[in-house]
Length: 316
Image (cartoon, rainbow, N blue to C red):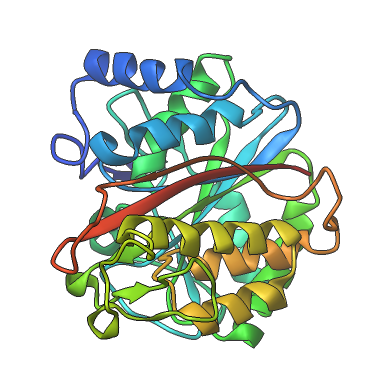
């Protein structure tokens, strides 16, 4: 019998605690202070930073998730360490480990995707898999909320790097049959604005509009009539969140072109929107709703930096 391949919890002990009891207590605290479960919420969006930064927002993400009847979970996230184009990458592992226990990979579905389009879906190496954190930071939360209910869904990680609109539409078309199956849940792992010179993004709006965005170095900030930088960052993020909630893929692409906001999961979000757009309208109960937002620090100077985190969910 072939020995199973296990992706280790490679960021445990650094990005979050590796102690099972401490982790269980911490996640329980994040969940208990979060929004209550939303019946039918099988689409969620949440961040992937260390828990000291993103834990409370991840608690809101997984506090809304309704895993009832869910057999598998697709999680789409960006690639932070390798660049590739013309395909998306998925895992070659049998399990993802966490300090709270393992999550089984649905290799049958992964093989189906590869068989249907072997140029679009490819497997990543174990090294690439374990270097990436966008999936791993979600796994302990997913494990806890499902295991507590005696539910054990399988996972399908999908890593997205370089894309264009045609490519995103191609990925969405391949995943849409799974999206329409209510036994599947979908997660997008993304942080929002990465602001500061170390991220090469110092956009600023002095009035809180999208019409006067400029480089902070060209602004006369600060003055009493202008927004603090952290408020400007929040405005840019909430404008993105509002646009995503409309369900208009084109509007989101226009927003990204206008602001160049450093939303690291913008491409997975685009794929999600393409899968959702036939199901929602501006007034539909099925649109993506937002229930949490935070920043790693409150930027008041061009020398500062921060990363933003948001939590969203949809009933589909």
